[in-house]
Amino acid sequence: MPEEIPLIKTESLKDWSLDPDFSVESRFADVNIHLKYVDLETLIQFEPKERKKRIKEDQKEKFDQLIRTNLFDNYEIIGTPKIPRGIKTRIAFSILNDIESLDYVCNIFINKIDGARKKRQKKVLSFYCVKMTVVVEIEGFEDGLQTVEDRLVIIQAKSQEDAYLKLEQKKHEYSVPYLNSDGRFVRWRIESFDDYFETEINKMNDFNDPRGVEVYSKLRSRRLKKENAWDGRSK
Image (cartoon, rainbow, N blue to C red; front, side, top):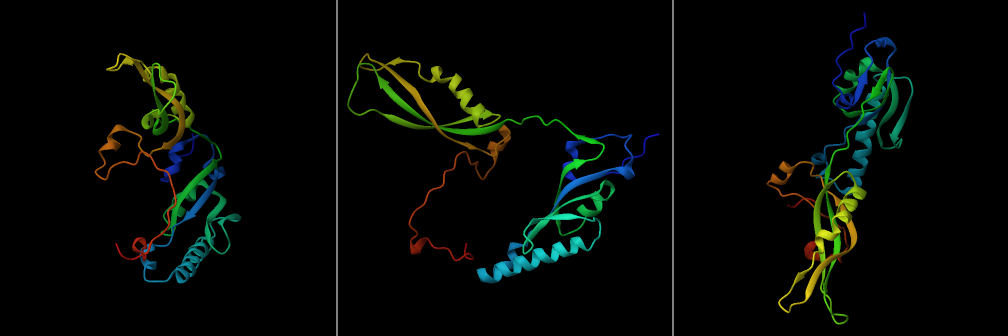
C-alpha cells in the first residue's frame, strides 16, 4: 500500500505531480529559500547610510536564524555573505511546511523533487502593447510633408514575437484604401513595429482596476530641478 503523502502547503508545489508509490522517507527536494526583506517603514527615520547598515544587519540576522534550525546540511548563499537573501539547498520533502512557517522566510521555490515530475505549464496569454509607425500614403503625392502616426495597439499574445506575428498577419487590414474628399485613394500603412511592452493584464476584468492599468512604459531622463526634488518622506 502506498505511503500517505504529507500535506505540503508550499505554493510552488502546485506545479508538481508526486508519485504516490515513492517512499516519503526517500523524497528530497532541491529548493531556494528566500528571506523576508526588512520592513521599509522601519527605515524611514534613518539616513541612507544608516539604512544600508540596518538592512545588512537584518538580513544577516534572519540568515543566521535559518542556519541555526539545522534543517539542512549543505547550502549555497543567495546574494552575498554580507547581505544574504536566502539559500539554495537540498532538504527532506517532509519539512517544507516547517520551513515555510518560519516568520522570517518569504517563500520557497522548488527546483526539483525526487519521485515527482513538473507539470506541463500552459502558456498563458498576456496583453502586449505594440508601438508601431503608421504612414499616411496619398495617391499621386511624391514629395512634401507626409503624416506619420505613432500608434499603440493592445493585443493578446503568448510572447513579443507572437504579438508581432499576429499584427504582421493583419497588416493588410490596416491599410485598406479609401477615397478622400479630393477623389484620391488614401491608405494608412504600418511601416514598422518599433517597440513592445508586456503588461500585467491577463484577463479582461483587469481593465476594471479603479487605479487604471499600465499599458505602455518607456524610461527617459530629464534634468532634475529643485522644485522636483523629493526628500523621501513627504507625500
